[in-house]
Image 1: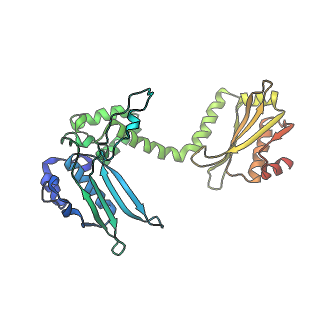
Image 2: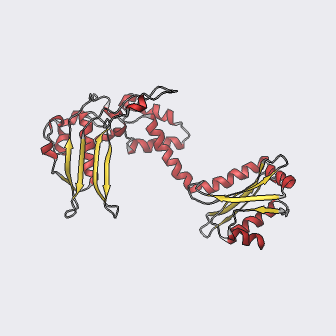
Image 3: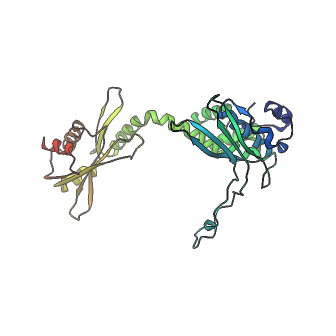
Length: 335
């Protein structure tokens, strides 16, 4: 039974027995946990999380240390109220808005485990359980940030309802009606939104190229001067693409005597270079002639872009071209 997904205090004693705890968690001493071993760090985290649920406070990750080979060796978890906000942030003047509510109360609760090289097991090195703040009642623990969770079955039901065109807020209302109220759900509307948004990102990641091409085709319905050209790689994935709308083509026709371009980086999640071809109008204002997303910066790619650009502009070549001095671009221009 995964109590973090909707625990019940009716089986309190059974939960304690499964955790190896035979007494009230508030009376657990340091000596009873220090030296206890776990097979992996996940088991230690699950036990401490369950302990915080039974006690009535949240948990967050603390210290994390690794060896030179990035192998995790030390991991700790602390109370969500650990630490204290610096007073300078509360007394800072002038201030436009009131400071956020203080949630850190310098709580000392911590569980620290360390990996033993010989056995590859995790041993508890430190445990402090005295709380310095009020604990929540049983009815409110499930709404702590660290203990909120959308159960797998509920999430799957929400996915089917979302595909049917039902809004997320209405899905939340339906589930609250199923469980007998919002206070009976182990998650908030924000958690459901986040989970469903993650699914959307995974689906869009496989279709983003076709979505971009479809968007440009849709734009061409209202702009008959829009130009778009693209290539595919051997795996039928989008490789390079260049496009320009009617305004870009009109500006180049009137002010296309000089052309400047350079590639920029890290403007998309794939890290592909973005090429913007610029010009200058009679008011010395920048005009954009075309955009291009490149697969790489090889000479062959630049040559394809320049040839496609001339095709877009009815073979009208600029009199002057300004670049960053890249040798590959220069070779393409000379050719």
